[in-house]
Image 1 (tube, each protein chain N blue to C red):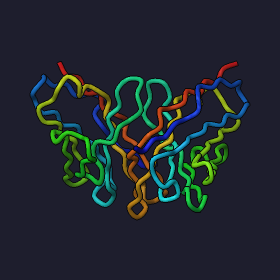
Image 2 (tube, each protein chain N blue to C red):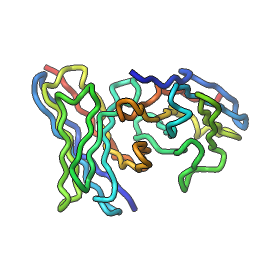
Image 3 (cartoon, each protein chain N blue to C red):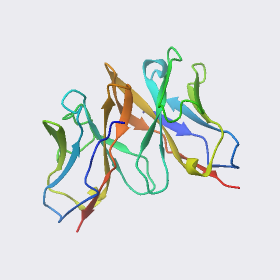
Length: 108
Length: 121
């Protein structure tokens, strides 16, 4: 079955830039979205269609793609950004949605 | 504003069925899909499938297609998820979410608050 691969954890200091990657064979042809999830809360969409930012999401969140890897970049990380981040895309063979394993962002 | 409000916590015995409800407001219910996503304790998000609120067409993840049923009521703006033959591994928080479609690709812009379902004897 199709899988999206994320690093389990990323750590940065406040004010630095965090980059969270998501790799998958179909990503060049299927849009990817990113979700932020804080403990005990529902996920929140932060990036969709690889690079688009929903209204209300700070400009410090951005998305990019290069080959089979998409990257969520958080510039000027704040302590409130500490959360789990999930990528999500489509398996075109089964027409099913797939989530990555999640990355825990720690702000030191 | 768009809201998805789910039914409350539930506890079931192995082998039983559970139904989780999701009431939508703040948008035209029939112009979007409703997707169901679950998250076992400490685990990743897991997509279960969706229902087209306008047509009732459903798409189930292969993992759940023999045990899950999605329905909707357009007069009440609600979507339900029923999972049968419950086992302990089904203990999870179940979320409904609104799906935005682009061809066969979706992203989920609004989520319910989640419903904890515990399966235990």
